[in-house]
Length: 193
Image (cartoon, rainbow, N blue to C red; front, side, top):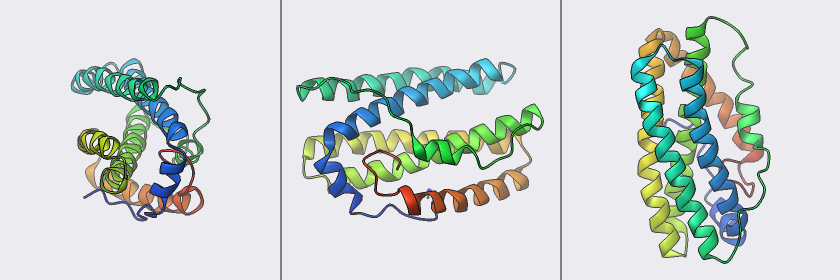
């Protein structure tokens, strides 16, 4: 369903279990950045009314997810750590050339968002199936379902606002590029890397 060209190595879950506090902090910031992305799309493309409505809802949902992860951090007797750069996203967003029409810029941003959500969904599925901590496993199962709907929403908007054939070609090329990124970053102590 997700179309990812390189699945996550299942051994990544072992890294997560040994570094759960770091992973939860990274995850919290991923949710906050997802909310920021939604708000940025509102600010950058206010003329797309349907997109704006969805981004309003998404920003609220993502901040709700941030709170859920933050609550888990606090329940573990920890505090939210500092944000770190996200090497995965930094590399991913270099794929498309800068510039172009507003529509092209929008489509590129939507495709990046779709792919980030798809990878999150895939990773959350692994965590839901393989974490020994059943409470955390159930938590990630719920988030996996949410991420899947986000992925399809972003991809559908890209297809709606851009030329469908061109968007699908760009999507396939981006998926292949992302697989190369994952070869080098796939076993990091982060949600995406």
